[in-house]
Amino acid sequence: MPQLSGDARLPRYQLLRDHLIAQIANHRWRPGEAIATEAALASEFDMSVGTVRKAVDALVAEGVLERQQGRGTFIRRPQFQSSLFRFFRFEGAHGERLMPDSRILSVDPLPAPAVAAQALGLQEGEQAIRILRVRLLGAQPVLAEEIWLSRALFQPLLQVELNTMGPLLYPIYESLCGQVVASAEEVLTAEAAAEEHARLLQLPVQTPVVVIERLARDYAGNPLEWRRSRGHAQHFRYRIDIR
Figure 1 (cartoon, rainbow, N blue to C red):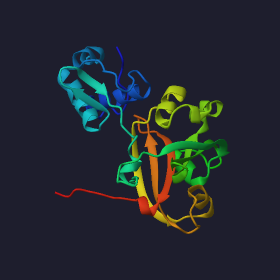
Figure 2 (tube, rainbow, N blue to C red):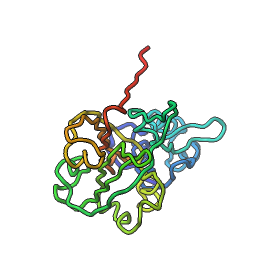
Figure 3 (cartoon, one colour):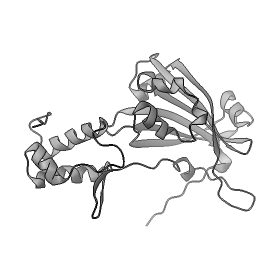
């Protein structure tokens, strides 16, 4: 019978919650799969169904699990595809919504700069991977992205041609490297485009750009990816409903 590790002063349901999140991070269940029933977990860990339910409730509240009526409890797969486009709106001549294409410009093994190392929990100068990517409408770049990853976790990315594997990186992280992005936090700022970013976006230097900085984490909360996405301020759109 599995033993629950951790601070013995914590409630049993909290110890089980921590154990389950570690098992999810270690791929006992994959995103989209159903976990064991509460009765099965109660038997496995020799605790009451009520205690198990409290642990599962905590993970549902955190967005790690989701209950589906009549089907069970499943590992939630976050949807990141449209995240950037909450803030940047791209429209055609008649107001129709457009989705930019994706093009990887480079994938390079490089020492992690200080800001990326701090975000990813690496030592400054430790080996990392930098991906440069642009999003385009036709031939016009509208977003420029600099993405940093730990080389130890994402080494397989250096052996493939990412442009042939589809426009979304997170499914590639999962299929090639076994790393699942479960959550992310984003910070929005603005700046004047430096020379490198102005060149990527085909803008004059010092043009105003909006910056979205994202730190993505796995189910256990460990940092996986740090990126900065820059887009022309004319495309920026922020909306919030206040009730």
